[in-house]
Length: 215
Image 1 (tube, one colour):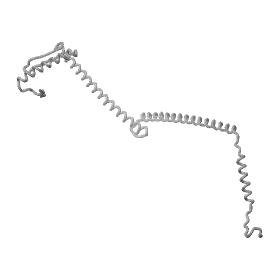
Image 2 (cartoon, one colour):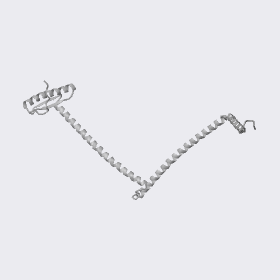
Image 3 (cartoon, one colour):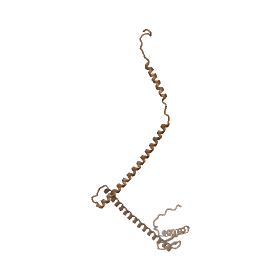
Image 4 (cartoon, one colour):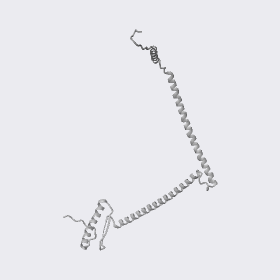
């Protein structure tokens, strides 16, 4: 016979409710005992019936387990409080850092405008002198960088010039050492062509009418 699924709700019949309590209580106490023995765990179980009767099981002592539980709860609460305080502190630091960054960005924008010669009406003499000194330092650094880059380019061009001069000298030496090509066959062919052309120019062509020899 297939056992039906028990619905998880209060049993209305008092007798059935008492029987079910007794069976399940004994099973729960047995499982707690098995858990403590098999897994070497500290287990404490407290059950009050509907009539207020106490049933308990403890692998060592119920009071010791309760004290240990309360100490653990306090430790967890302390850790949670410390975590919350740390989070609040980090949030405050992040907010302050964000405000500092915004302030620095605003100051940077103002300084850039002043460096471009804008918004100088509210500047004092000391600020203008400091701004002038900054501009002179920046100009000096720019000129130094430009001078360095030009010197590097000049040095590179000199190296390229030296390499080209060496290559030109090598080509000149090769031209001196190699023999000249002979153009005699070409000249002979040209002479033959000229002779034939001259011969063809010497030949005269005449048109004769009538029988040959009649004139």
